[in-house]
Length: 325
Image 1: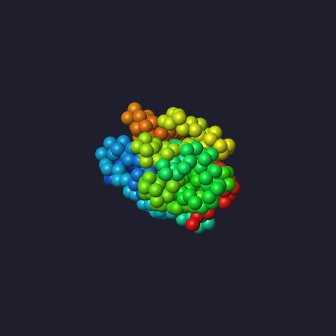
Image 2: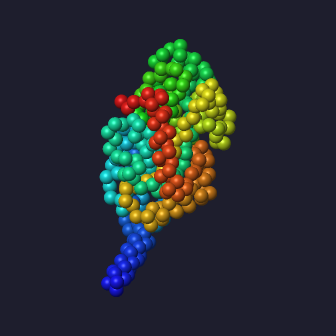
Image 3: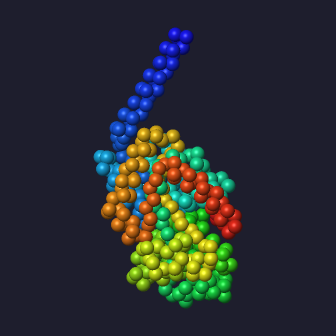
């Protein structure tokens, strides 16, 4: 019995030592630069949000290097992140496309969104606007549907990649409106939207803030917004549901995750720093200007969101028969 008590005491001391060591490591973190992988080309919402919050993390005294690794609707960059050490020095600005939709699209996805990542914090949701080139003879959602119905495959839409949320938003719209609009995938939001502006393609579901900037300069025409309610950033813009496609709703979110196995103390430290950034007046104003909604919340809340949306979008992908190309 005495040896048993001594063994228990030794185990307790070991646990205390390990906990103290973990806390010490968290206090010393970061001791070198942090990589923040953005799995899309520069200029899209992932990239914008990463560059908004990274300066707050840089206040710890080490640089945060934003690294754009686009392709395959964000799955290439996320797969690369999943294979890195879970030591807190590699993070990713993932989103609903590569963390919630991808499992239903790819039979051989190179990562498991639940098992291969450590949730850190949900950053923001980004409403999409249905945007068209000004040359398109449609000023409302109903007129666009009528045009696409009269001329199947006459219009083309761009997306930030096969299986991306912009692709999902368009395919759901096509399925609900029973129209046939040709898909042209890109490696990010910015290059796709550039081609809508220049008239190479005619249509895109793009994040509201970027699309509205072009619309204000008469380079795009906005017909509707994908969320269930109108956005305070564009109250004049009707939801697609109220503009003729009842029940339509797509509301993409973006979140910071790391590889699996990140120490809890480091996750807590990162969560607190990003939450503080999202609560700052400067970033609140910037997000409002962009039309983004700050989210925040605990790592557990993000984990629950990922699980819930995997199930939600599995139904959408099946109903709309969305396939990666």
